[in-house]
Image (cartoon, rainbow, N blue to C red; front, side, top):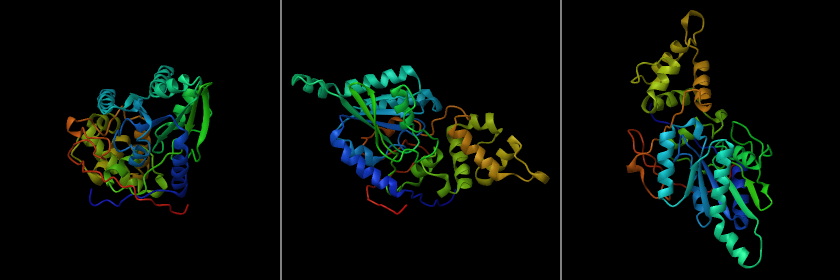
Length: 315
């Protein structure tokens, strides 16, 4: 594709939520950060990383059931090597137990200090991350019943809410937060793939083509299986033409139904119907401090800018 317009989507409620989240940090013992296992770097908000640097932290690779398990395992090991408590997050009871064990481990010192003073401490953990990575789903799973509102789009959770998980564990489900300026077009584009940015502010036709192009590099077999695309060198409209022909998205006279094709491509990727795909594959050259915004080495992977410029647009 040619030059890309920058995606800049930072609604007023996110600016307010960031301030409220900052106000709550002093009450928190543990921060649980969720990223998307398909995009382990692009789906990490550098502002949230900085805000929680002095807290005990857990990193969960959410929606791991949609990602390549071998790649997820590599990323988990990488984040562990950086000193983080990390694991894949899949919506199962067993994984819920694993997360609770990680919270216990992260809060151990605070609990022991309180016990030395004769106090049975209630641990408070905050769940953070970009929109649509599964924060409310995690909260509901740990609670054991639906309590946090869930939706497959950004902006469903609009305010901080405390949820009692056990008599001595409280969890705060926070709104998804992006950073004010998405200066790296590749990272912004990939966030749009997973619906972390509302489709209404995007050119979804161009986005679908870009996703197909990324998948030609990352998962050509999936495109062949689902859309009968046998030539991974196709690009642009020719690639969309192949999708229409492969799936029969044709109107009268054999005209390609691009609107339907684009909608299906985005929907099926987001829903995991294209298979378990990781777009950001782990590579040893990507091993950098998490203070940076480097993303995995590859043919079209530029350095990522880390911007923390504040911006509070009107809703």
